[in-house]
Image (cartoon, rainbow, N blue to C red):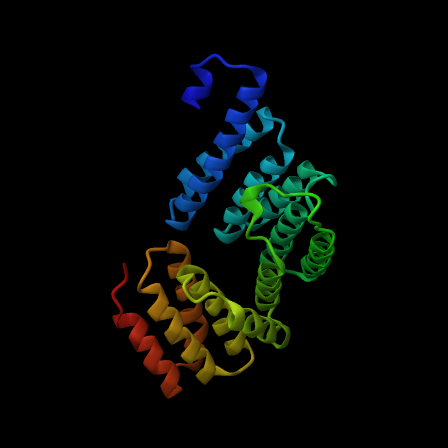
Length: 264
């Protein structure tokens, strides 16, 4: 922002600078959020939103606002997260690239799932359906912004399965997660650990504690190799969920392994 405010440039260059500030804010905000620095991440995201709005880039604005909404949803501010996720979708508008709309709708679905209740469950299902429709409309003749490169059907399946897990629908969540994980690049350690964490919870909900324990052991191994507050939090969720089955030897062993592990 100092470069933008302290230099003279044309309107076109100024707009490009603001867009770059917004994109960099997205990356920096994500890093801060994953490290558990949520206040810092929110400050960075809001700075990026301001820059993107000044650049009149509604797609980038929606991406940044949606990212902040996602953090809120995951840190105990579910209603704020839902409100902001819906606002991000609305601000991006119907003319946003299909891939962008799919992402923003995914975030709305996740926020609904975290809020809970019958109405939110229905809202989550509607948003997932619309996200799939949006991605179906994605065509090669309309290039989305480069920062949306990762939004694809696989990621859509991941979010769908996570929503089903959060809504305690393991019979729908487990097959989806297994399909996604069977095709996922195992070198993406952080994402693999996160996706496996939802599979572990879904298996526990399906009354398959031994298999949930085996998946949890993989999550522990992967998480010990990376420094991510997000994966650490997911491990805490799994361990809490498995307490119900602590009398089962496989579960007891993995709970003891978690307690004795040394984390980055």
